[in-house]
Amino acid sequence: MNRILLGAIAAMALAAPVAQAQVVRGDQIVAQSNYVSRQQVAIPQISIVVRADFVLFSVRYETGTRAADERENELSRTFTTVTQRGGRTNGDVVIEVGSPGNSAAVETAAIKEVVMDQGERSYIDLVLKVAVKPNETFDAIRARTEKFVADAPVAGRVEYVIGDSQFLGVSEPKKHRETLITAIANDVKLMQASFGGPNSPVRVNLTGMEQRVQTRPVGPLDLEIYIPYSMSLTSGAGN
Image 1 (cartoon, rainbow, N blue to C red):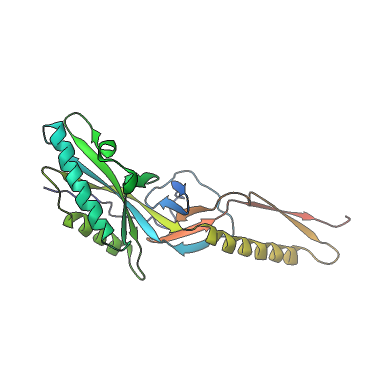
Image 2 (cartoon, rainbow, N blue to C red):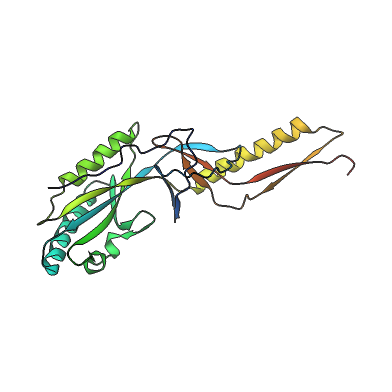
C-alpha cells in the first residue's frame, strides 16, 4: 500500500525562533519552512515580506523486491511515469532528482545513477517544485501535491513517502534586493533627518550590504527577505 507522510504544519508561529535553513541556487532562494533554530539571530530593521513563488516537496520511491535488477526496473518505470506526468502540468509541478538544495534536472540523470541500492531495498529521491497559484493556501498546495503523487501509478512493489520538511522559495531574488536597497536608503535619510541638523550633521555607516539576501518564513506562504547589514551613526559636528 502506498504511504503518504507529510508534515502537518508547514510554517511556524511569528514568535518562534528564526528559521535558518536556507539554500541559494542560481536564480532562486529557498528557506525550510518548518525548521526552527534555537539560536536567536538579529534581524535588521528594514526587511520586506513577499509571497513564495513555489514550495519544494521531497518524495522517496522505494521498493523491497528481492532481485536487485527487478528493483531497478520497477523504479525506472515509476520514474518515467512520474516525470512524464510532471511534464504535462505546464510548469505547475517541476520534478528534479535528488533532495532540496542538492538536485538536478531529470534530463541530466541516468536511471542507473539515481537508483540507490541498500542491499535489500532500493530507492529514488525526487524533488517536486510546486508553483504557488494566486490566492492558494499552503493546505491547498499540499493537497495538490499529495494528489499528484497518489495519481501517478507505481510499478511492482514500489511505495512512496513524501518528506515531512518543505521549503518555501522565491524566484529571481535579485529583484527583491533592489527593493530592499531602496528601503534601506530611505531609512538612512530618516536617520539623518531625525538625529542631525544643519549644525550637527550625522553620518550613517552601513556594513554588510554586499551580502546576499537572506530569508525566513513568517507565514504559511510568506517569506521575510532582508540583507544582514549593520548600521551606526556618527556625529559630524566639528568636522
